[in-house]
Length: 128
Image (cartoon, rainbow, N blue to C red):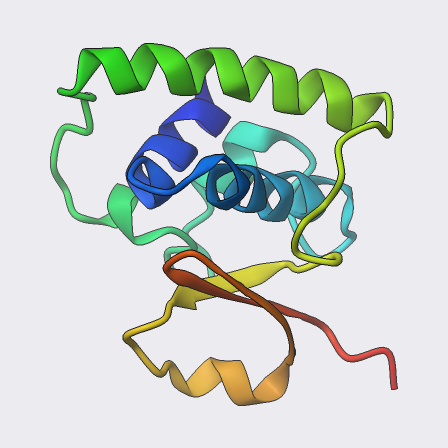
């Protein structure tokens, strides 16, 4: 449910690859030592700051587009299953961060840009 909510609010208008990219970042964080160990903890992480803006707006986040919500729930289950079986291709090349292409956050200069997919730009931690 947590992954589905994250995809819904971050990429519901994106093509499948954009939704998969948001899922990949979320799942990449779960296995990275600098982030929490579960999908829900990653999605709702608020320290040091909110990680995903949709859950930091103090609103009730209840999906309203039911057809899209049901589709994203199905896709989320498939993404998790494929990810755990190492069969999901990560379109972000291991990204842990992203932002919408129309903003320029100051944190982005600390990371390596991996891809632009749909409306988002993806980054990973430098291997240097």
